[in-house]
Amino acid sequence: MFKSFSRQNNSILSSCLYPCSKEQYSVHINCGGKQVTVGSLKYDADEASGGGAKFFHHETRNWGFSSTGEFGIKNFDHYFIAENISLLKMTNSELYRTARISPLSLTYYARCLGNGNYTVKLHFAEIVMRDNRSYYSVGRRIFDVYIQEKLVMKDFNIEKEAQGVDKEVVKVFKAVVSDRALEIRFYWAGKGTSNAPRRGIYGSLISAISVESDLKGLDLQTGFFGFKQIKAATNNFDAANKLGEGGFGAVYKVFCNSIFPKLGKLLDGTTIAVKQLSSTSQQGNREFVNEIGMISALRHPNLVRLYGCCIEGNQLLLVYEYMENNSLAHSLFGQEEGLFNLDWPTRQKICTGIARGLTFMHEESTLKIVHRDIKATNILLDGDLNPKISDFGLAKLDEEDKTRIITRVAGTIGYMAPEYALWGHLTEKVDVYSFGVVALELVSGKNNIKNWPNESYVCLLDWACVLQQRGDLMELVDPMLGSEFNEEEAMRMIKVALLCTNRSPTLRPTMSAVVSMLEGRAIVRELLNANSSIYSDEVRFKSLRYVSGDSDPTSEEFV
Ligand code: ACK
Image 1 (cartoon, rainbow, N blue to C red):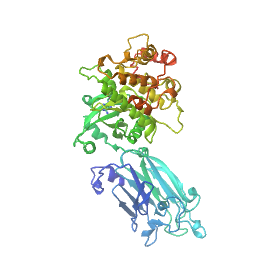
Image 2 (image 1 turned 135 degrees about the vertical axis):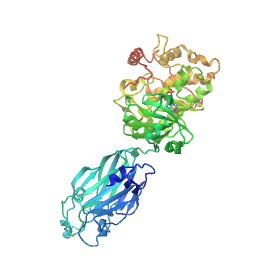
Image 3 (image 1 turned 180 degrees about the vertical axis):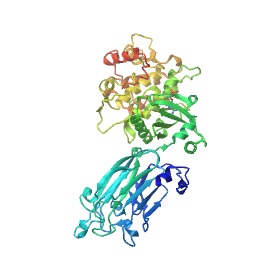
Image 4 (image 1 turned 45 degrees about the horizontal axis):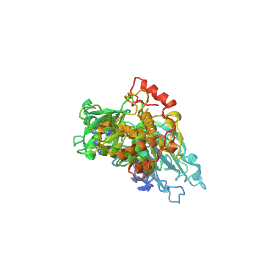
């Protein structure tokens, strides 16, 4: 009955329900009891006493329950709620002091849920058939539990599972919500006792219910958007609105206004960027969910802001702040007519901005994060050409132990530190190396490995090492700048870049040290590379293989 109520939007029955004003991603109910707060979770009150009929239905704005069956005794209203007045010793005892019981079938349903995967926690404690000094002990409560109409527990006996009375047992299940509704049913299938120790206390019993979207577990501080609205806002993902294609999929530009209420409400009058995960993308859902969790938890002026996401069916989308000047790669290496030339103060600002963003990720935020894919296409520029780091899809939490060996190396050829490319050795120094490559590209206006005219060098970095030995480092500076640049700052940036790309991770500076050096507050140590080329071994060989390949090596994923 509830299904026909909630799932047929146009039915007369659906008007009986409150309309869903917004989607929710969690439901917490203290069954049969008052509203209680446990940690940061507020469990709704569920005190409606009911019965006196064969069917009882009660509903709040976004959840409700129905109970069927009779206990077969008079004045049994209060029997539908069980209460334990003695002292309960378990933690969170507030949840177990009361419970809802039902002689036949008890169904809780949550509505207006965002579709997706959920974790359902069912809290039980036997607080009724509990007096083991009397004939109460002969009572046996046995019932079945269904979630989304699937039997998840058969012949469940709380006392047996909890190994005693007045003890809690929490059962955790996964559930998929595909039509915005979740149904949990407790069903007495005739097993156990019904008249012993006395009438009116048998049947199913539930103390508390907790339903959480799996995405909520990531502590999202972001909004959720509907696929329909994004589809309308992008004019059905019209190519005319396409900003470009990344490793993750296509990125679209959207102007938000009141036509798209949900997008508009949050972002009225702003332009946003929507990233649509392509089905053929090498990166998958794992990275997608990873990215949402990572960025939403991080806020810094040099990190791209994530407004929210959309997960519906197989559609996965991210909603970002729009960056007017696209990527640094676009500005530095773009061929288009009229593309502005980045002047020196802007290059200096971009370089220190990226370093500040990385310092935050590595050293200052509560989550310590290694980005793993720092490159010019992942640095976006806002209207004032401030840099912001994007594409956290490959980011991995830098776990407790500082160094880790990982089996799945993922990054971009030309920016990857040798120890990571060869042995999967992952530390924050991997980002320091990639930053060094980007700094070198900024100062020279050249792509590290693309379009290298000189056969003697594999890449820009290779050439820079040779120039360092020769003492000709200023030759690296972008000829486009002419004489319009600050020599001292340019020399500092080159030296910092070389220090960051040292083949030994331990000799690379931390990102906070890089910021100090770039700002002239610390002296840049000059370490001459022993051999003329850092790409003289396996890395060079690997790079060569990619450079000579038919695909674009700068965008090649090395997985
Ligand atoms: O170099 P681009 O023009 O800048 O091409 C890439 C493309 O989409 C694929 O990543 C552009 N892009 C990505 N995110 C954003 C954003 N938030 N604002 C503007 N452009 C973006 C990027």
